[in-house]
Structures are given as structure tokens and as C-alpha cells.
Length: 380
Image 1 (cartoon, rainbow, N blue to C red):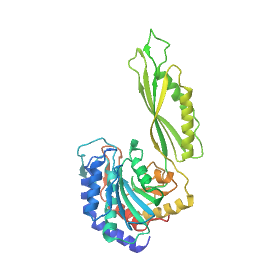
Image 2 (cartoon, one colour; image 1 turned 60 degrees about the horizontal axis):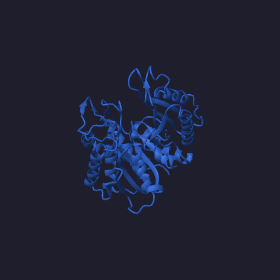
Image 3 (spheres, helix red, strand yellow; image 1 turned 90 degrees about the vertical axis):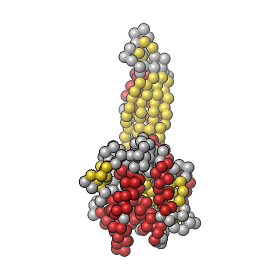
Image 4 (cartoon, rainbow, N blue to C red; image 1 turned 120 degrees about the vertical axis):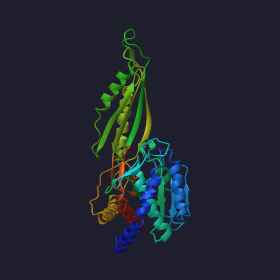
């Protein structure tokens, strides 16, 4: 990263200080449950159009997509931040400012990062710098929870291999995630005839059958090619203490950074399910969501791409990047063999709680990081 780029980024961030705060407060009050991001999407589209963007639209997945650079560019690089938050609110979100911090549900995950993306995009819209390829600025839907990264999946379904590299802005400084933690999530429902605990004693009990399944699931030996984990996170069912449970269900997931490990765990899960099938009841597995792990990546290409991100973060923040693996929108390009990083652009805390906060001053540094990557993207 050259000195001119550093000076441009710092000067632009200085000029945006007051507007960053105002834009964050406006956007942060807009409710955006996963799959109900319509209001935020409309806000982002209208804001980009007001800044002079010509090619901006909301697609069928509720992604806001703004294309910059040569309109006929074959190769594209994506800069994205997600619009959805984990809370179901449909009314204006509560917000307060105290001690240089802004508190609101979802304010850091991912609203503040989205603000930095929008403001950096405006620099490109207005100044029209020379870019190595076409750029897609994307405010994407469905990153959180059982959104299953569907917004980003739709983006890649539409643009395919034209996308050569991908940046997601999510989480906190100095995160630089280049390793995808994939996951499969299931709901398993067990049904039996049930009955009275005394007069029908001996009938199959849905809770008992699920407990047997859980015991077998916890005897599974995960593959060791990459860190692979599993968890039964919820189990419920039955009616009363004197009833043989007719129905019970559990939630189960397994995670890994390696897609082949996920597929092996899926086979082992289905074998355990079949083993407990028809022992007086029926077991039904519903796939709730899939987040793919790392795919056929060129490790040297990814290393070059990530090294540039590391350099930008170090230079502009003075901090050592956190390279912890994560489950983010970058999972989709990484699973397809496309270089990708997820980078945090704000300091804050208590994500996924209603007490989440961001340090308003940190947005100034984060905007520099986003703009620097736009002006000088990594090698791909």
C-alpha cells in the first residue's frame, strides 16, 4: 500500500467523522430481521442512488447490489456487508449514546461495518479512481443464523466465476478471517404411539429413543484432517410426568473448516439415525441449514490475498490481525475456491445481545481499512 493511498484514506475518513455517526444512527434504528431486511435494503439503495450510483438495484434475495467501474467488466471483486441482525423486532430499534459508545441491537454486527462500506463506496462513486476490475458493492441479506448465507449464495448464483475475489466486512477490529468454519444443522423429530405411564408401560418412549440417538451421536469419532466438532444444543418433548412421550425433538449441528470432514460427519449422522429408526417409533431429520467449509482453494493464492489484508490492517490500525477461523459470508466464495477475507472495521462488544455497543471513534479507522482495500485490493 503506497503512501498516497494512506493519505487519501485518512483525509477522507477525517472528512466523514460527523456523517459516519449520523448515518450509523439512522441505519441502526431500522429493523432488519433475517429474511425481513426490506427496510434496510431500501435505505441502502436509496442512499447509494443519492450519492450518484447509476447501477444499483435490490435483487430477489434482498441483496442491494451496486456495480462500479467498467459496466462491461468481465472480472469482478465484491465488497460486502450484511444488512440483517439477529433480533426479530419490526419496530424502530432502541438506541442510546453514552461515553463515546453507541448502544443498539445489531449496531456492530453488522450495522457499523455496513456504514463503513457505504461511505467507502461513495468515494469510488464520486472520485472514479482507476480500478483493476469491476466492483460490486453489496449490502447482502441472510447472513445471520438460519439465513444460511442465502444472500451470498444468490449473489454467486447470479455472477458465478466472474467474481474473482471477495471481501466481507463483519465483526470487530482487527479480525481478518480467511478460514471458513462450515456447518450442517438438523432438527430430529421422534414420534411414537405413547400411552399411560402405568397401564401402557413398555411402549416406546420418544424421549428415550432420542436419548439413545444422542448417546450414539456422542460416540462418533470426528475426522482429524481439520478441527471438527458436534453438538446437541436443544432437546424437548413429552406431555406430562405420567405420559409416555409421543413426540420429542432435538437440534444437532456439526462444524468443520474442511468440507470433506462435514460430508463425512453427515454420513455418520445419517447412519446413527438409521440405527435408531423403527425401534417402536419413527425418526425424521430436517436439514435446517448448511454453511459450506473451505473448498478447492489455491493455498498460495489465498495466502497472497490475505497477506495484503494483514498489511493494510497493520498499517492503518497498528495492531496485529486476528486470523481466527469463522462462519461468515466468506464461507461461500471459500467453498467455491475463490479467495476471500472477512474483516472487522469497528471496535465494540456484546454481539448478539441487546446491549451491543460500538466505539464511535473506531469507525474512523475502519473506514480507512475499507477504502484502502477498495483502492488497492489484494492479488487474485
